[in-house]
Length: 377
Image 1 (cartoon, rainbow, N blue to C red):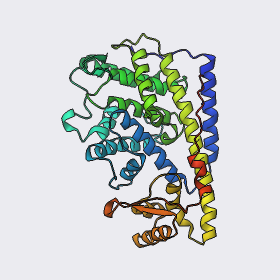
Image 2 (cartoon, one colour):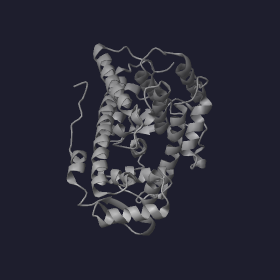
Image 3 (cartoon, rainbow, N blue to C red):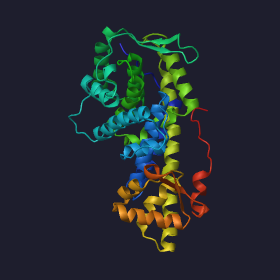
Image 4 (cartoon, one colour):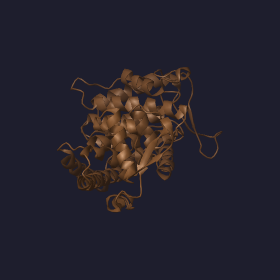
């Protein structure tokens, strides 16, 4: 028996409808390919990866995650964090591919173990891709000697994961995709099939279910960035403890968990919608400013991340704009001379950020704080 899909109330249906409306607007804005879309997708993916790994104590900046994604050495992340980010990025890349798999796709225990190996393959002593062989406890944040949750016996893991896979393939198929994804997340994290990495795998499965249901590409639908914010991380653990119970007790009500996830999806959709709108406005303003200076429009690929408050690496700009190394170097030197980019760091650690002469009217909207609406308030 698994934790079951709850009966939704009118307020839950209203929240689902609002999330759907926001995503419909995003689809319309992304229907026509845009030059900025690739950089936006990479940034959103990096935010999701950074958020999920921060929950597990492997903190890295979004800029460092983007560097890892394009094969660059990160500026600040150490080797341990880099390995964790790299493994999670590999699994999430595969999930992005699975979103487009054909009708012969099916969930399986082998798929779950394969994704886990992608995430944790650098920890061979932890038996990545194999079910745990012993007990697992989720300890209290206040006192690590207190077990806030005790997972099912290891002998139950193959049967319970098999039941979850069967449910994913065959049951509650008429339930809203956001609800199915939330319940897959809850059940996998409660089973806790692996000695390490079960939390990240549960969040990845959440994204995979949405991708397979055709909600949106994982980078636009993941709630991992939202979960990675400190206050939300505390709430995440609290609601898991409230709904999951101290031990595996699937008869408990799961509506509070589903509402927590719907709130997360609603607020993350607000965040993504703002990011898309801001990207479109910043790119358009940069396009006009670059044309006035008589610069080639390829320089937009260097200026856009800086205008959005991120850093620029020469190699990343070279790849994004499809340039030779010499062209990329010349362009960046020109932007530095003009005072639009400022050089930081040395040698392999050299990067660039927005400088004082980058027009303020381009970046003002990026810096403006805006509140998030709570749909259950």
